[in-house]
Picture 1 (cartoon, each protein chain N blue to C red):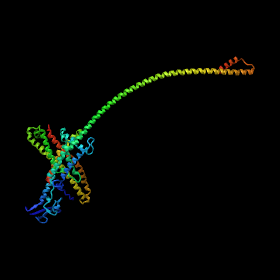
Picture 2 (spheres, rainbow over the protein chains, first blue to last red; picture 1 turned 180 degrees about the vertical axis):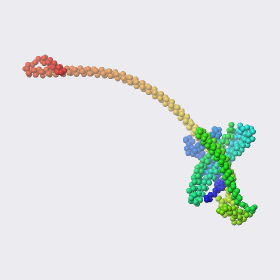
Picture 3 (spheres, each protein chain N blue to C red; picture 1 turned 135 degrees about the vertical axis):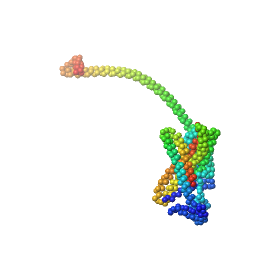
Picture 4 (cartoon, rainbow over the protein chains, first blue to last red; picture 1 turned 90 degrees about the horizontal axis):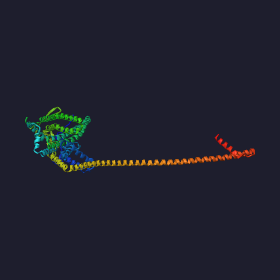
Length: 251
Length: 84
Length: 218
């Protein structure tokens, strides 16, 4: 029998504090902001009059991705002013996600509740603020009393709309990012442990079998690259949908 | 009996919690699994029929997946909460 | 207080009873923890593994992570909003604008070049037509001069040919006369030698003439 002892989830996430109130997650978050700043700084310093190359090309590709794939389909041309916000949100989330597969670091900062919670609360505040700014108190009316519903049904519809708009949105936004990254992290830990246990468990016959979870580990690492990008994209596009919806009520 | 602290029961409780956590996650994954499969299948069909609309379909597909997937992820969080 | 520790051994559940403070009251020590808490003796026994540092809760947000994450994001977003993005956008817009204007310039230059090509072709056609006309004129002049000269040369050739024919006829006559005289003198000498009398020179020359003209013809 294998003596496989899976550690409790808390232990996967435990890191010694570098100094009180500054731990690995904080390092990753600060590093993400720093790396993003440096990338866009280098891109901004590069000669912009010629065809973009290297880091500048990369940065411009991100900007055009944000504009073309996130803002234009959800907010339309009026939403282009939100590009810097969406750009920094996308870059920050991606750079917080991607340490989950970088060897040695191996920890997505978004697999902890704090950063997703902060970002979705920020989006929540922003979309409610945008709603009130663009529609005044009419925002409450258009979001809680959607037009085209028989008056009697408002007893049913209004609480549902209230819960889904003002409570579930930030909650699902947080949980989606957090749980996706934590699940990916746990999967990687599981297969790494399984590989280690099979190869170093002392049973020679099991060593070749250890290749299987190892391949799974490699495959999942590649998959996590995709997930890191996709979650950043989905978080940002949902933020754009919420903000765009608050700015322009559905007709 | 009061004189004993019976650790075995504690262990039973933990085992029950673990298995119910597994059930919670497994049940929570069924619906979204079907939903996402249906959603992506239909999206592929739409993209194959009208390749020029593929960009719009893909954006909408990702939004739909995000909403559907949230249910499974809530199940995952419940799994962690019960399993602890 | 007594404590019952139930473990699953190889022969089924084993129950171990111990009183507080006794050896074996707890089966755990700090060294059983995956991370030994700082400042604790690894041999010190603990009630359960719960007393190890339990690590962070996977669900609850931690204040320090919240502060640092929020601070990092806010700084990043502000930098992006006021510094990084505008610079990038400005140079991108400038480049797009320059590309657009150079497109327009290229279009204009192309139109201009097309106009120039058209003028050039028109001028070329004009010049070609003029050249063709001049060549035709020159050819006509040449033709007429040539015919004039040819007739002149032909006339000259005919005159010379006539003169030459006359000269050859007279030379022929002269040669014939000389030969006749020579033959007559030879014939009269021969007759003189044979007969001893010189024949009448007139008769001789007449005979010679007759013979020569018939001899030539026969």
